[in-house]
Length: 499
Image 1 (tube, rainbow, N blue to C red):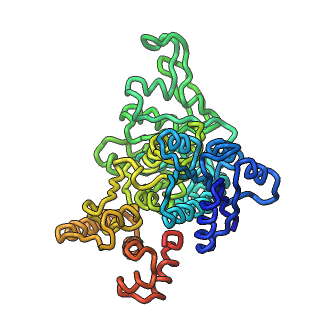
Image 2: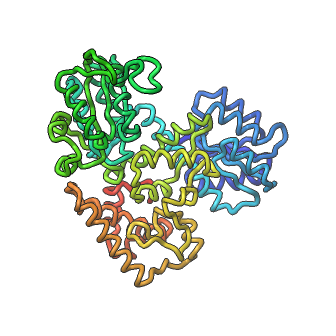
Image 3: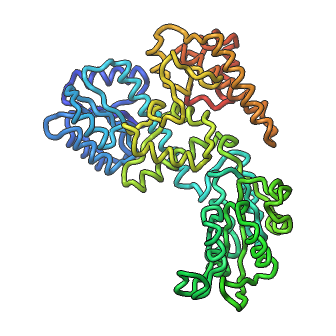
């Protein structure tokens, strides 16, 4: 493991931190000034420190200047700034410069060591996350449901067949359409998208098929429609279920013979377009209701590809979150923020009615609004419903003051005592579990037992570990299971990094 670099002109501070970190089996290296640090960073063969802990005021250069230079050369390196001058300007400057955390002196040594350990863990996670994001394709997803989508895209890669993509709003249907186009024989042709629900009925016909000059008031010139623009490529018709009934007839004719007329035109226009349609609605029900043509439905529904909502692929939330944070930071021109495992756990238990689009918006909000470089549960937007006090523990099985909340804050709210839950809260929790189970059972999923059992066991184990401050044997005793059992469960449930 790479060492923790300590930069401070105070020998006593260096000595205390060195001894404390060595007891935790964390190697260290100390410096008395910033120039020696910069020389070591540029002249040595290794990749530098795992974490840099620096005083803010030292002879020969400030910690903030060092922070700027280190971040320019090693943007992913966590830097902790220490200072005896606990003023607002220093704190703001430290965070604006990309510091992992701000540590005022005098500090509690165990808390300082814990902060450094968190920075080390964050450094490891960010290294893995950045590697994954670098290697990531245009779509991200490790969940089995998304792997099915990827396999379907692969099977369709050499086909021009019409595809219907179904899925809830915000689940990424246009991304799937773009992937189908990119990996098709038409990849060199244009990809043209239109949301039929976003365009007024009176304008939609012209948008799709174009119009001749003078076809209607305001038509000053001839205009090519989306079908012409997509010639030799792919036309993506999003929210096809909202298309007006009379336009459905014109669309069916184009799909049948490839010919259409511009609005106000008299000559047939020939186009060679692959159509990919998408909808969040139940088109079979729309057909039964007489709102959608049955013959058009069958023409579009040659291959149906279902895109799962985010709540059915929760294991993808950490990867997507880190990806969107990196993406948002690049757009804003700032350093990407990190997110703690506790905050990720809260996101993992959120229903995300807006699906991936909502998660992307949350990440953009966090990039702007989160006060520190490391995002904690308390930084998440109000819609996530984070609670950080014992008196308002969420009435769900998965939020029992465990990984979903900030364990340190739970401990502070009720030191040396278990969080008590009222009888009514238990009842609400059971009702919530039943309601959630019914929601899952109403879908076509076949893994409800395994999914809920896994989340229930994870929450119990993490809650016990929070109460026992990470002591596994004591946690196992409180849960009434063997120490081998808790070790095995931690491994099976993938909780090693949290436990």
